[in-house]
Length: 372
Ligand SMILES: Nc1ncnc2c1ncn2[C@@H]1O[C@H](COP(=O)(O)OP(=O)(O)OP(=O)(O)O)[C@@H](O)[C@H]1O
Ligand SMILES: [Mg+2]
Image 1 (cartoon, protein in one colour):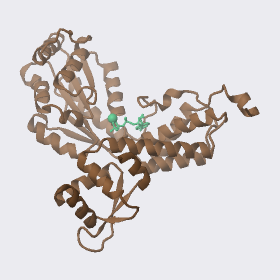
Image 2 (cartoon, protein in one colour; image 1 turned 90 degrees about the vertical axis):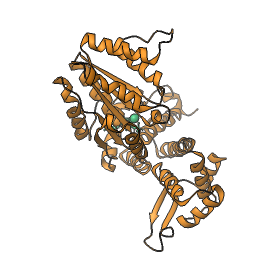
Image 3 (cartoon, protein in one colour; image 1 turned 180 degrees about the vertical axis):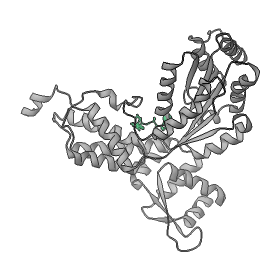
Image 4 (cartoon, rainbow, N blue to C red; image 1 turned 120 degrees about the horizontal axis):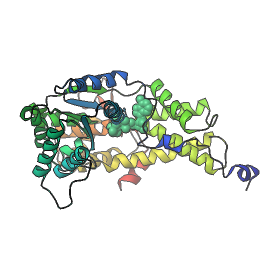
């Protein structure tokens, strides 16, 4: 063991490790003033005892949607005792019963009895309680796409929103949070007129915004002078490329851990390189795991050889393999682009299919390894 290791093995570079946790709520939440104002405006009517405006919150992954909802709910809870704010993570609560149990818990303060009340009964108890206490209710459905696949969202929204018509003095409102544009249309189709929402958009962060947010984490999470400006820039670059702020936050944490386990007093080039190599494969695996059968077929075809493909040839291969038509091919291609697995480049030459080039964003070998 080197002298450095002996001296520093027990030391930590982290002032506060929580700062890098996925569910950490940052105290400094910049670049989202407009969206926070938008949320406040849609909620404001409830403070004047009229109906809040139903809202769709839309933006790509890691653009701060969940954080914004949690922040606005915190503010409402602190200031207004008669509004129940219910946050539902639809990945966890993706059944009708699951959703109403979560609302029950928030309104009643306890879990529904295990004896197994029907959803209708649970709904009645919730409404009775709201009426009795003259409470208003706001429900945020985060990542509602998970719900759209499982249950009749129309029924949930209808039940929640008809309270406004049926009971004087009790107001309810709904937030639907989405990161996949495809589901925006599905939502409209499914819940249509009951919902008629206002929309708040969360655009992707710019390079400089990502840099500032990551710098904030560095200041909050590490002791001073642990990472150089150059390395932070390298991490910012990687993050910007990936289009996912979480990549950067995680890279900082992993690089810090690697530096620490090497007994280093600060993060060095090689620690960042190692963290990046690890993170690329984790991200790739995660994205591939979420693919449907057709999407998986297409990515396999794209990763078959290490060369740039044009869309027309790719479609021919895809069609041979799956029998699916051009329209479906296009939507699968869009999905892969949305997930940032591929880039689609217009060359401006040739006919429709010929003029698009498909470029894999990962190494062919890496993709092959993960799609076996
Ligand atoms: N403006 C910001 N300032 C500081 N941290 C931020 C900001 N925006 C997002 N983050 C951080 O980025 C991560 C992702 O944010 P969040 O979970 O709010 O994104 P999201 O839009 O809900 O993503 P997803 O669609 O994947 O659920 C979190 O760790 C969050 O703290
Ligand atoms: Mg979220």
